Each structure stands twice: as structure tokens, then as C-alpha cells.
Amino acid sequence: MTEQRFLHGQWSSRMAFILAASGSAIGLGNIWKFPYLAGDNGGGAFVIVYLLCVVAIGIPLMIAETMIGRRGRQSPINTMLTLAEEAKASRHWHYAGWLGVAAGFLILSYYSVIAGWSMAYILKVGGGFLANADAQTVQAAFLDLKAAPDIQAIWHTVFMAGTLLIVSRGVHRGLERATRIMMPGLLAMLVLLDIYAMTTGGFGQGLAFLFEPDFGKLSGESVLVAMGQAFFSLGLGMGSIMVYGSYLPDHVSIARASIIVATADTAVALMAGIAIFPIVFAHHLEPGMGPGLIFETLPIAFGQMPGGSWFGLVFFLLVFFAAITSAIALIEPAVAYLSENLGLNRTAASWWSGAVCWLLGLGTVYSFSGGENGSSRNFFEWVDFLTADVMLPIGGILVAVFASWVIKREVSEAELAMGAAYAWWRALARYVAPGAVALVFLHAIGVL
Image 1 (cartoon, rainbow, N blue to C red):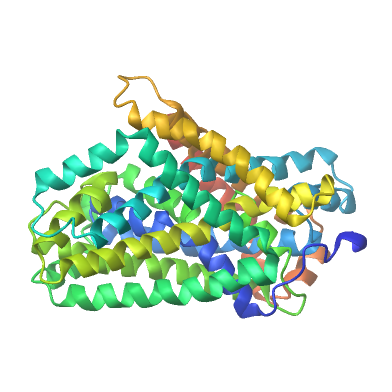
Image 2: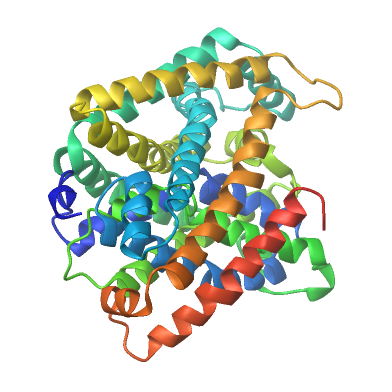
């Protein structure tokens, strides 16, 4: 392990890790998915369950994954192999590393396409598209974009190229520098949008929807959805947090850093809701609009607001920043593995892995442009199901089991240095987190 220990470099400080890990976690799941899931599942009661799940499931798993990464100091695949040998456990544990790397890689292939939509909308909104746009115009524009594979492929290519340019520059000049610029920018844009939401007629109604719980609207399925969102929102189970943890200096407290990252991720999701729901209610739109919320519903509202085009531009810039900070984390595990095992320099490893990921993304491009496909899943839906519903939950369970059952207690206790709180983490990581993620997995595949 020692000869690989700093092969890829280290973060310059705890803050660098926090910004990068927050960028990994904060993505379309916060800006796009959390608001529409809250809208679909009753608002405030869903938010309370979500917050409890972040504490009981998300934070223990983030601590576990970061600890594994820092202990191994390699790509997730090699880290799992090294630590399994250290614990005198089966070498087959390295397949858990493969699962995470493959999941992140596959997710990026379609994530890049959807992120490309945000870039297309930056151009549209900047060109005055939203001025006096009605619902029919906005919906037609979105459907036209989805039906145009050539346009989607261009934006997919541009987004992927931007991601690879950052990743190829390494930990300090690439990942760290990008997140130091983009994360404060993302926060500033969110604050600006929240302040603007206060000027709308629906601010009080939006806050009430988001924070006043009505448990009568909460179903068993809503609880499972909240559990799943708490897990997925933090970017767990896909190797990103593990590889970022491998760059973490030894003196940094894993538990404190993980709690800060989880808090930042949750705060951004809530701030997105605070920005979005007042706008939705002020314009008498439906909060439970589902996945079309930011590309179909919000542009209608922006088009009717004073200064709406400017705020629409800020919003889609925000979506882009959130997407690219997650994208660099999704491909980083694959780049680290190629650098370690094939002897490629970082630039070559980045562009080779990116080329394959880009090629897979074309399957998603043509999935959207093909329209509805009856009851059968298209390429995008299969990849989304395989990663989000199967690979990530299984990966999360394996990480929890490995960190709390396979790694020896004295090793994890020394790495975490949590004092009396260690017993709480170990209990949550051993029993609560894997059990909860197992329920999410069984629900996702239709067993529950």
C-alpha cells in the first residue's frame, strides 16, 4: 500500500476536500430531483423524513466510504483489494470496487446528456427565448430539443469535453481549482435565486409547502423514496467519495468533514426548494410536476416574471455548475484506475475513459429522440434502472458491510478517531444503513 499511497496527489486542505466532495454530491439530484420528489410526496413531511435519513443513513455511509478511500489511497478497485488483503478477507471484495466504478461511469454517460440540456437552455434563455413565452411554446421547445439527436449530441460532446479538460489537469490544477471556483459560484447563485423568490407572491406558500409537515400526505412509498434520495443525493456507492477520500490528508477528521459535506448537500437541496416552490405557487403551477419541473414548468414562470429572463439564465447556470462538479467526480474513479493499472498518464487516462463514456452517451441521445416506446424500456431507462436501482444500492450495502464488519475494529477506530461517537457510527453502519438501503433496493426492483 505504501508505494501507491500518494500516487494521485492530495487535497491541499480539509476545505479543498469539503468543496470537492460537496461538488460530487451536489448535482442534478439536488437542483432537479429533490424539488420534484418533494412536490410529488407532499412537501414538509417528506422533507422531515429525508433529513432523518441523511443523519441515520447518509452520514454513516459517507464516513464509511471516505474512511475506506483514505485507508487504501488508491482507486476504489485497488483499494478494496488492498484492504481485503490487509483484513485477511476474500479478494473477491475488489468486485465491490468494480461495481462502484462501473456505476459512476454508466451514470455519467447519460448525466452528460441531461447536463447538456442545461447548456442548451443557457443559450436559449440568454437569447431571449423566455420573453413572454407561454406554456405551449416552452413545452414545444423542450420536446424539440429531445427529438433532435444532432443537437443533443453536440451539447453532450461539449459537456463531456469540459469535464475531461478539468479531470485531465489532476487533483490540484483540475479538480481542486474547479471546485474552488464553482462551489462558491453555485452558492452565490442559489442565494440570489432565494432572495428573488422572496419577492414573488408565493413565497409564504412555498415555505409552508416545504417546511410545514402534513403526515397525512406521507405514504410508506414516500418514506422509501426519501430514504433513497438521502442515499443517492450524497453520491454514495459509485466510487466518487471513495476516490476523493483517497486524496484526503491524514490529519483531517473524516467524521467532521463528512458531516459538513452532508450538511452542505442537504442545505443546497432545501435552498433549491426555497427558490423553486414560491415561483411555482406564485404562477399557480403544480408542485408535483415530476421530472419536467425545471425544463418545462419553471421556464413558463420565468417567462412571466419581471426580469425573469435574467433569473432564468442564473438558474440554468446553477444547474450547469452543479452538473459539472458531479461529472468530474463520476469519472475520476475510472481515471485513477487506468493510471494505476495501465500506466497511462493522467491526460491519456482521462480522454480514453471519456471517449468510451461519450460513446455510451449516444445511446441515451437516441433514446430521447426516439420518443415513447410503449411499455418496454429504452437504452437510457435500462442504464438508469441498472445503475440507480441495482448497482448503487448494492454498492452502498457492500461499502457499509466492508467498513463495519470486514475492516478490523482497531483499524477503523484509529482511522476515524471519533472517540465515544465511534460506537454510534459503527452501530448505524453495521445495522441501520445497510438495512435501510436494502429496503430501498427491494422497493426499486418491485419486491416491496
